[in-house]
Length: 229
Image (cartoon, rainbow, N blue to C red):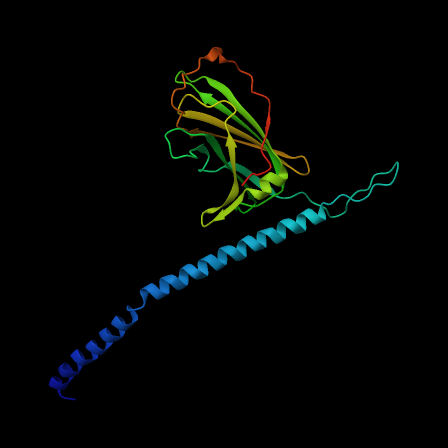
């Protein structure tokens, strides 16, 4: 083939290839939308799988009837494999009216399985809150009992994971911007997990700072209202 003909064909072939590439790049938005859809479906399927695993474990651990004077041992029943329990980043003050000042506390509880995935495991929780003064003193300002049914209604799922998101009203509103939240999470079989976290709040206007003489005893436990959402 003559040399001049080779140089003539190269630009034509290159233009054709560039045209194909340009045609492929016309669909990035469709590809991204498809990937987002597949990712959402994957997360939903994973959540359903976790629920099935949890239900299977709960059924396995159902106590058998115990005859008078005897003890029944369950064969093959194993406790739920809960590896960790944490307080999520959403834990902190809650502003309900849009006016400066937090009217309540939001507590995000995240039980995790052996894979480090948030899992909706049945249980109940005791929440305690302490106000941290400028001098570093911790003053108790609230204690709440959250039942298993209330926790079940508070479960939230998202792209970043799931958790129990529980809204609470102050027993005693904090007067400083820092609090310590401590949660004791109790499984149905009696095992307990505890987690704590420092959180930021916006004090309600007009509250005077408390002194260490305020006391070191928690107020009586408050039962969370049935209308928990």
